[in-house]
Image (tube, rainbow, N blue to C red; front, side, top):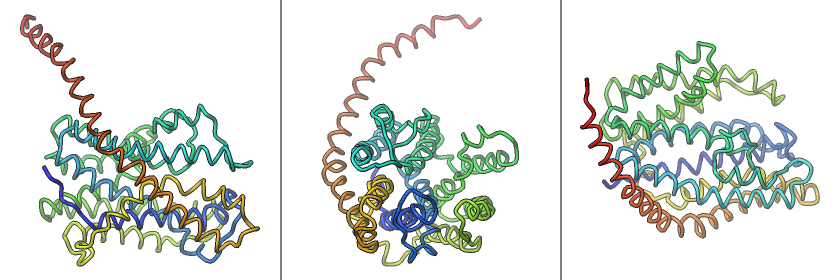
Length: 367
């Protein structure tokens, strides 16, 4: 089944990535921590809210991953996710590792063993430090992929709406009991965003009704609650003022934007193709943070802060395009073909055992 191309999603991805880039470069590195020696006070009042770009990523993921699962099999889903995630990750992780060895200085370190574990994209589950801190969101994404893959394996994608409701109820229960492992399993802090994105996909493809609007509204409330309550802890941690109203407004804007996509009310943005910007998003997210900090530390104050700041953003965009053009795009088709061949070979090996198990099962008496 051919999936519909939702053009606005590419633009939203790029906007979310830029939010995170500005957050790290203009706020988190210097004003909100000690990772960078270069201040950039001009953008601090706005950039400090850029961390919410990750939440927009999660909403988009809920939409796109359910769309991917609804139009394929478990096998095609697994292959598409592997091809989408791993080649660019391998390239970006390697670049960041080499940069750390060369210009990491006293603040950034990496070992060969750490690098090899990171290349599996499972370091967060194996309690090995990430080569770059932005990888934390990938571990959240992988948990969501596992949830969707389980629904696919059980043939439950047509009943996704029921499972989304159950997931949201489970999150509400988990947030009120002292069971941290359950909250982690349910991705409790971010589940509402995945649920909202998936609900918007259902609205777009199956129409709007009271049940889906109710699920979206409930997700919005569940999303607002922890983030507006966390404003005080953010202020203490980063020694600056955060507005609960601004946080709530940004999160609400994300929900309204996704609803506009779901109901096809984005006007001309829906007709324009933003594929090139969307292609930059993933490598830009993976590459920008630590490399940017290390370059700032190496060159500031010898180089003007404005030149460094905007020059680094331009450099990251160029590097992101290079990763897409030289790694993602060339490897996509052969890697997909190779994985399909591997699955075909495994199926041939498994089929005789499947037949034998089936025959053996018929011979075993039931009483």
